[in-house]
Image 1: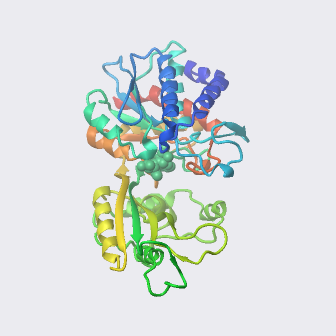
Image 2: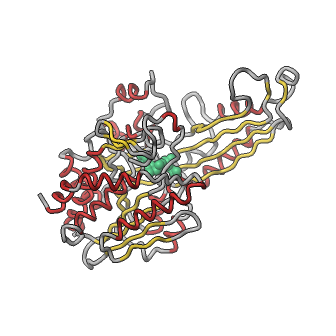
Length: 457
Ligand code: BES
Ligand code: MN
Ligand code: MN
């Protein structure tokens, strides 16, 4: 075994302790009262990177949360890998549904339970530890590396995009390496070559100037909650086809080869239904579950409220109702265009008995990685050596919008080398990450960096 892989094996406890330290910091980016925690998490990573004798380690302050940057580029003749990850996490609520506290990492049955364990602290940290394994065994890091660890991924990376544009030269590289996705199944390594984009909207329907007695006024005054439901119901037809004019115009259709590749993946629909406790799957007519969940666009209500929500029955006709609606996008849909089409269509569905306001939250572009890119081949080989299984190539339905920006601004492909699992419950209570995947992740990252020079020549 190589010195690197041996170092990883003999430092497992230390690595886990350090990850736990990071996981104890509640660096929730959606919560403005957590700014100190965000700084703590950034500082922790700065210290980690500073202990590795890299040429540069620097914290870039932004109008929002800091960007942790590092670089070590001693080789003239070798590729440069930009490693991206995020140290911000989703809120932990509802806290009462966690079996153990979200920010007290706890190990049970080989799983680390904590917010951020998989998304993305645990996964991003694998690369820091991989670099450490070269440095602490007195070896050269086999390729040039740069790190960008951001603190705003979960709120749409508002300050990272301008940062990329401003520091194009500093960030120049041959590829981006990201571990912020899931493997196809347990012990089944996979490289994700497609991610969906996102357009996230909010709709507000306002009727009378106050909540009304539903007996005194009901039947004579428009109910905004009813209107909201009617509008939402019109956004898809019974075949699950989105009814917004122009919505599908730029969608690149799946080719026969694409569909064949999806069909080849070892997906078990019975098992899928069982883990979710559902009787049947549901979605756009004419597509399989895997296609629906990763390569076709969607429209979903993410939250809906209005009127009386507490105990018992209060007879009231609400004065307003609201919904948050997300649309997942596929190549070549444009989030800004889709947001405009949504707004126009929803406004056109509004009766003149109410006021309907549509606003836009953050969004992002979809992305596809070129399957012939040599970096993917090195990634696949690294995975195979560590996991002992052939790698699958799949697309995923989640979004990492910055991937499209890396391509647009820096002109490079991203290698999505996820070590997570769909069962990690990211964004949900009891988020977890398998300890064995944390260690295999570190090994795979180190192996990838070792193998890469051979694939680039
Ligand atoms: N790591 C996830 C994205 C992800 C998860 C991709 C699983 C593939 C598989 C990321 O942190 C995330 O949650 N992204 C958000 C979008 C962002 C703009 C808030 C998402 O997908 O909802
Ligand atoms: Mn993530
Ligand atoms: Mn996330």
